[in-house]
Length: 446
Ligand code: GAL
Image (cartoon, rainbow, N blue to C red):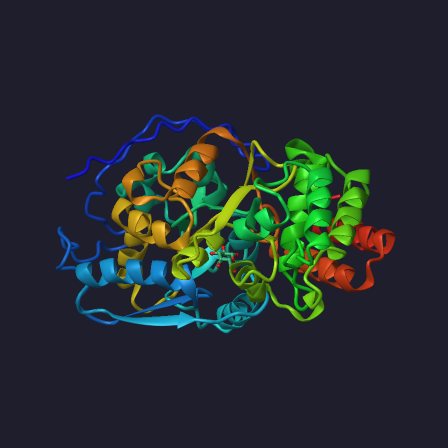
């Protein structure tokens, strides 16, 4: 049996006020889960796989409906079924909409407000969960399970901090995704005499000009619906502002009136000149396929794209950190929690245990394109891109994604997404910056 190659991870997490993290390795075999303090102990859970939950249902809510996302989710379900053979899994996935779960989050909120929570749901680790559902007292704390399953050692401290509010963890991260990735179609690049990714925006536009002279659009861009253009913009301002000033946008240290935001809007505006001609009608989910189909030379997108490429058996691609962001990992994470009042509570606890387990994370992430939140990945299961991502996550400066719920509260993310989506149509830099300043003030980030 291949021994898992342990990775020593020393991280300096500069994740929006998160302390530095650097922890020795640990991987504890999770002991049997006990009932959290204050509750009558549940029936002693089955010790080994294959004799777990024997009845009831488990409804899992997500926006994972295609490609590597479905493949990864099914891999988690397979492990769960082995351990809980009598439980019926209901896969309540909501397709599409603007990326980053646009439609799904709206449906979820209605259900949560209506006292009809799914048993567990995909939610971004960090401010999205805390400011939306934790402050509304809709989630159970998970500290007892973190302790029993060894998760405080299995995850880097910065990840546990992101999962927590006032020292209580509220969800279990299944992965770490990277937002700041520039993906390019190698054959299209070579048609323009290009063989590597741009490292800064001057190189980006020089390459875009060469591609344009060959009739090849550089950028895959969505102008219909919010999300993807905002994803481009969070990447651009990270590169223009730099890591610390980007992080300062959410602590008041950096004003949204800063010249860097203006430069970022000018850069996004210029990118439109090199975008696929029909960008105005494209949605978030249209943008990755364009690179696979050879209709756009590149896309700036999170590394679920790696999972998408795998699901399409597309190999003619290269990647690099988004121009100007090398050395920084713009992080986000998908997690699952325990809503208060769910019917099959034990079945949900068994689900969270799979999500946090080494077996679960090493089954899910190779298909999803992401890297495990745990420090003890079995590297032999991961491709070259993911091995580099694991190394970068361990060595780069880390900041949280806006669009994908790590850095900011959901209300600000919605404003941010909509303001940038409107900008793609109106291209009015100063008016747009003014709206961002107002949105940040409303969110208390000024
Ligand atoms: C992100 C999510 C990823 C992936 C992506 C594509 O917000 O964290 O897991 O689903 O959206 O829409």
